[in-house]
Length: 220
Image 1 (cartoon, one colour):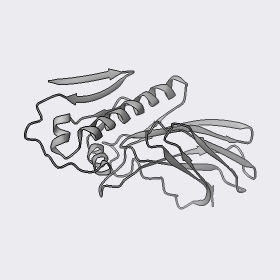
Image 2 (image 1 turned 90 degrees about the vertical axis):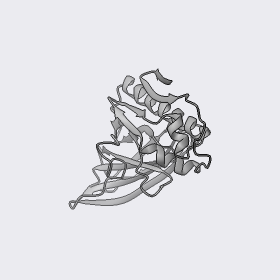
Image 3 (image 1 turned 180 degrees about the vertical axis):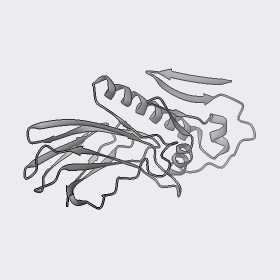
Image 4 (image 1 turned 120 degrees about the vertical axis):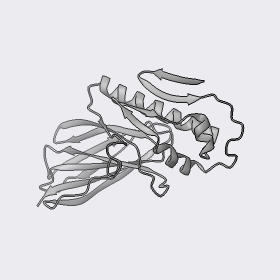
């Protein structure tokens, strides 16, 4: 029997079918996330996990990992709703429409220079992190790249520069073509000034925490 859970606009599929005859050998958690990522879809602004428990077990995903993956989908969807309720625009990546580049950090164009910025960790406790750096003269944007160990997750935070604080939020589903162990996705935020300091903060709903790296984008 199919049981569907919808809490705070969160949609997750699970089934309680008989488990007899299913695959007995399970994969590790990283490969479980890789498999799960192939069954994540975006409906509206909510992620849907289109894999029943029976199917998951047959693919080698353990019951423990299956339950954890569902939790991360729920938390990511709640994160999207919470950000939208606060008036923060969320860059929600669609894993079906952007299978190649939805979670790959944006590369510079021919008319941009990339200058290294800073890096910080976001703990597993859910607490955020941040870093402060000097904006090189002429820099017009910061590119914020988030990496988490979850099959789907997000990050929200602020960019404070020149007396202006800008909120950002982004979600992503990884591409696990070779069982990559992390989900990486990026967004860019405009800067109101250069030749000054900028502070970037970030927080993720991923149970495993995550990291944030920041670089500057400067027109040539």
